[in-house]
Every structure is written in structure tokens, then in C-alpha cells.
Image (cartoon, rainbow over all chains, first blue to last red; front, top):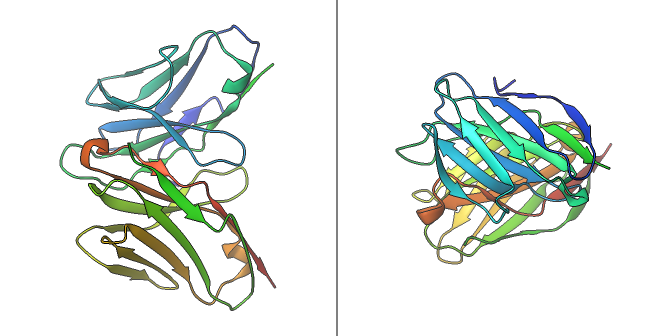
Length: 114
Length: 113
């Protein structure tokens, strides 16, 4: 196990609703990245948080937002849910700041929008 | 931004054979290339990685090679076992994309007993 935990594991929401997903990073890690993995696809980078600040964003609209807390855990918020937001949402924990280091993934949150 | 292409999309081998998965990347500034294994319904697991200052890295039955000039890298699995069956993803990061992984589309590896 990686020590990276996500909650909840599964979630069903209605189109137009809002959702918050949570991630606890591995001990000693200060960076959390969020990815969206559609069925049969590779993970797509949403954004990254390093020491509580957003440190890069992928090609996702502003209704995808996030936070990182002083203990380096993180939240992903999605507003105005659309059917295409249905996917596995993964967070990855790493030690950033100096060079690229190993990123360890949580088990993911399976979001279904109906 | 970075773009990673992965081939083949599916790979079927007999137990004991070797398997090779290839990836190409577009950003010459990328300098870190991990490989992940994802079993059905589970998290991606890092199985091996390589940095741009080396050309090859090996860990038991798994090896990765990197050709910076051609901008491609490959995963080699020898003596495959049924438990190697999974989806394998390559990824790249570095340069202006520091720490943000760009993944390939994945390869479904099936090892037949």
C-alpha cells in the first residue's frame, strides 16, 4: 500500500450538482496532483498543489478547483457536474521542489454522474 | 505541452515469453519517465522509472530503456507470468511540466498460462 488514501471510494451525483473529493498524502510528501481517468484511457492531469499553492493546471475548466491544507491533504471540487465528468479521480502524492520524484497514487474515487 | 504515444494498445503473450511496450514523447525537456501497472479496479502502481541521465534500468524481470535522441522509451518484461496481466501506462514529465505526469493511452497485457 502507498499510504495515499482517498474518500469516498464511490459516488453517484446528479447532473448540475457539486462534489468534493478528498485525498490524504503519504507521510513526508508535500505535493498532491489530481488526475481524471475515463474508462479505457490513461489518467489526465487536472492540477497540482505544492505547499498549499496551485502549481500548474491541465486542460480542465474553472469549475474544477482544489485546495491543499497545511497537513498537505487535498480536496478536489467540481461544480455544475456534467455527464462527461463520470470517471475515476486519482490523486498522487509526491515530494516536490527539487526534482521529479516518484508519485504514488491513491485508490481513486469512482464518480458517476447521472 | 507534452504528448505521449504508447504502443501497442493490446499485447497477448504466452507465459514465459517476453513483452515489450514502447512509448514516444514530444517534449525534449522531459527528464523523468515512470511506468505504472494498473490492475482492474485498482490504483496505478509504480513498477519502474528512469531519468534522462541514464539509458537503461533493470529491476529483476523488468527493464526500461531510454533513447533521448529519438525521444522514446520502452518497457521490457521477461519470463512473463499470468500475474503480469494488467494495463501498463508509460508517463513523462519534466521541463515546464515539472511534476505533472503526461500518460500514454495504456497497453492491455494478457499473459496466457
